Image (cartoon, rainbow, N blue to C red; front, side):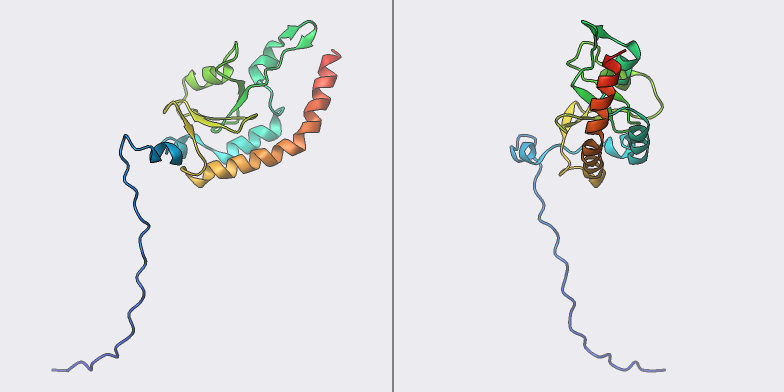
Length: 171
């Protein structure tokens, strides 16, 4: 029988400390300050689809109102409250507008979720399924990435939108 030689005593490795856990009481005001975590993000957000749609469509214009070519006193009516679907990049007027195209987009039947939208004027992110405002701090980093991409895109498109509005008002 072979006897094992005693091994060298190595210094103990420092143990990783776990992050402190915060209790999640339903009545806790901390949850309100921190934000709401949405379970739909992983299925209802597609950065690639949004980037493709943004490159192919006019920025911050309700695509349905544009199709309807609504005019008031000879000027095109383009709502300022535009929301972008974070699944496919659809841009529609908000639920407080007359036509509510972003809400209709969410309610139309699809095999995939189209429930998370972002306001292109306030950068508020909303989940229709949860009926809650979402925070980029409490949710997956994909929300922060997409907001960053959209905000960078805004600076590039401001002049293009002004030019488009001027040209279409002349029609």
